[in-house]
Length: 149
Image (cartoon, rainbow, N blue to C red; front, side):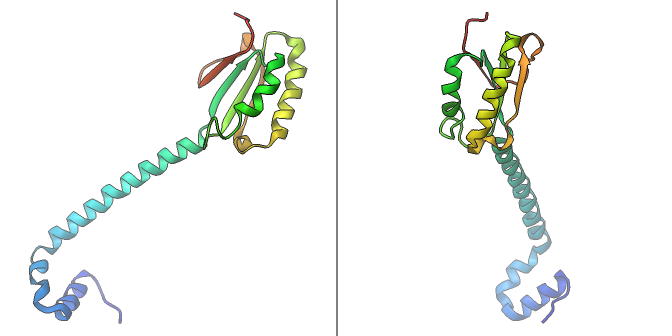
């Protein structure tokens, strides 16, 4: 059976339950407003929690590796990009060097990093740039592998 609007439902419930609902029916509009406000507050809290979860899982850590052409860097990448070190977080790598002749070796390392195909590589970005032109803004971690400074 179809029930109409709220008034029809209240009348139906009152007929069905009888005097049990007398106390409930006296302040129904205030009660329904209170329930609606509580639902709206919970909805806002749920949205905030979902947004926080999305930020944690979607926004990558930006890791800049200065001197990524150093020989120890090659063995560092599998450990650095494992899910044990940064769980539930994508990683954006920035590989840098002062030596322009080493950019081709950084490109080769970048291809090998992509071939690792770890969970964090879904949103990985690899920037092969010279330190003179490189901006360290929005970088979460900076690893210095050589004494360039």
